[in-house]
Length: 250
Image 1 (cartoon, rainbow, N blue to C red):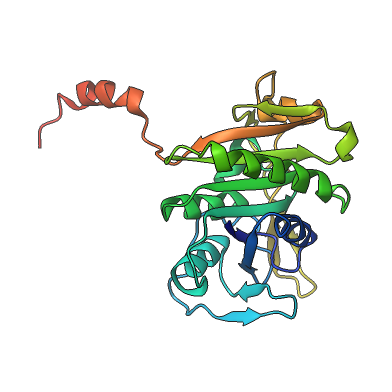
Image 2: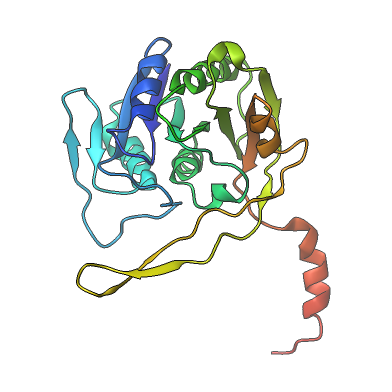
């Protein structure tokens, strides 16, 4: 089995190193990631500048682009043989609820799916350097299952794992995305030269974090797996929208 591994925290992040080591026990792994932290990059592409690569001493390939760039470039140019699976992570921090819209980790997996490959995104719901091995363990179990039960062609799996020891993990729950309240407003301050600078506020609290959501599963000691579909069409709105537009003449 051949796996393409990427992330959005960059090739020097602990999460991708831990996951690479775990995946090499079951597959041939090619690791291609951004040369710096690209958290929040979503599905952005680098279109106005050339992409450059650098092979590191550990064999990882650093790219001066986004997570989406890394996956696209790896599949189209860098991999000597096409991978069987794209894995993104382990992200340092959760990617749950509305956050998946901004996540470079989820975007890397999405790009793999766009290019015709099954893909999963993996995140550790914590902000310390502990327990990445728990997320890596869950990832291995999911990949082993994928060998006999492939993903639907229009979906990726979004995995979030609580930052706890493996023996404290209660299991896995299949979940839906929760929702947050809107984030706090941006804050304004000045740099040492008196020029205005701005920072995003903190994430909003959970608006919909009840049973069945990814928020609930992780908060209660379970790994959350949410199937995400690529087609964003609101099918239930097609007919009502036709009716709504019926009176417009052009």
